[in-house]
Amino acid sequence: MYRNVLIPTDGSDGTRRSIEHGLAIADRFGATVHALSVVPEGPLGTFEANEATPAAHRAVERVELEADAAGVDVVTAVEQGVPHEEILDYVDEHDIDAIVMGTQGRTGLDRVLMGSVTERIVRMADVPVVTVRLNQELRIEDADEAERIARDALEGDGYDSDARLTEEPHRTSASWIVPFETDGERVHVHVDAVTRETRVASPNRNRSR
Image (spheres, rainbow, N blue to C red):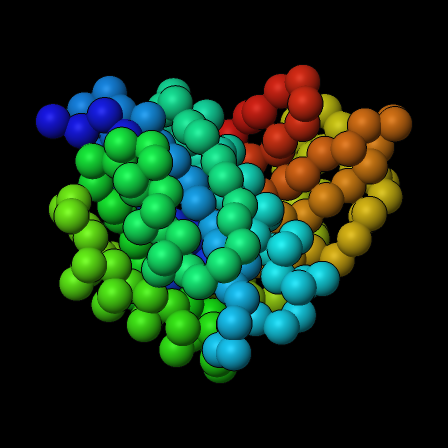
């Protein structure tokens, strides 16, 4: 029934459950997941492009990691433009059969934009649209706590617990991404802000705990 399932994501906490639902649908039907993040342009868009573009790449990276762990084929893309237009164009260009997306964006202006984007997609898309709200309370909202948990996960996975933090932890789709460098290797530890589960991701291995 479904061959290609699109998960639009802005990396906000509200996309956590849409990722779960999208992957579940793709796994059920043997479909490919497409993770798309759009850096908004225009008078109501995000003007901080230097921050928005890396955030968009982190958002699709999160979906890719979850898809790999679930054994689901995944394609990622980051586009610039008007969000609902870019999403609809992607649907047409990639033969998307269903869209799964959250109804809550980030705080402030982007939160309003996310709700508006979802509403427009529901009204304008020619394929089924599944909308999902975040209804789980975050247990880890502090970056320092996320770093402590990530270091414990590193040590348990055989890495040096004194690894160097390469940048501040950042939260994407209700998960903290904590980047380290250890023994010349770059490693990202993903800490689920809801369940406290961790996943150590490196070019050579991905492990869940």
